[in-house]
Length: 409
Image (cartoon, rainbow, N blue to C red; front, top):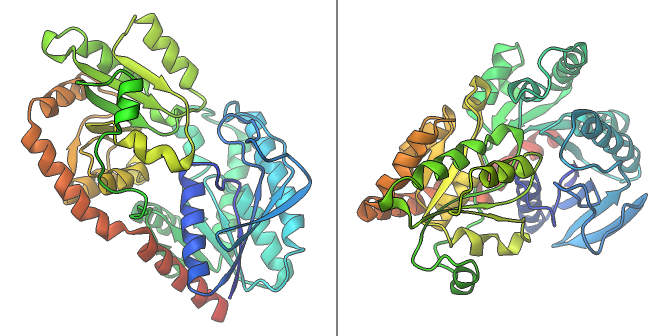
């Protein structure tokens, strides 16, 4: 079977959509299938093309047996609604036309978070007379309202009608959460064609390891208790809460040896750094994004991982993919996300929850874990055990069965 996959994020980018698509595609190739990925020049999240690439009309390469076609797009940083829409729409156009030149595809997949990529996949599948599969990673454009980027707008109303059109036209929908599936069913989308394949962890890359000594020394973290956030610094993540928790920890003599580490980039990174600077904090450390291969070294620096999203009903339906990486690394988790992901964390027993956007609750639980190493060790062991249920290879095969079914039908 030849799988044509459209996505605007792909390695060497390191965000969740890029990692999921790459890991799945590698697994499908290993199963004997042909995979062509249509994407753009890597530039997320800074809006700057990565070294070794150019924003050209067409360039092609092979990555682990995957044919990767990279196209020209309008590139902008992950900041500003209008410019980002232009970015998405430019890939919709170039991705659609490029996919027409990919021959003998058996199924066409378009992935979110935003659905313009799925638009290109649907149009391509329609012209090729091949089944279209929508991989649903986010309830977009509902998430735009949730983070306050745009509250009420006729533009968003149009986008929502387009969103529903794509759901109805898809031969199958692969959702990353049960909550997303229920949301679509409640909106009268046929539940029989919605399949849940959660995010997971690549066990070959994310496994327990001792703290990286070279990094510990270079960053001055020797003898420190380190809590950290690794990932996108966006509007949805409200990382100001973590900064406020760091400020609270400086007021207590018993928590002066705690350090809060931030690693990543995004639309709110500068604002979060400015807040920490305005508070005069000396217990926070901001690091730029690192190559995908180096991420486990930075996870190893942490004694506890912090996961956080804004307190809004929509985010009760999401499952941050970094939670599964923490499972694999054997890292205790402080989880500031309500809903389905908190249920998973509690069922695995790999950490504690705290109220989203409640800095005092977060600070208190960081201190609690620092003072209770046996509890932390128990969380770490349970996380490692739970990781087996979210193995990326197993999940890739589950999604492959969906693609095989629609291709045969």
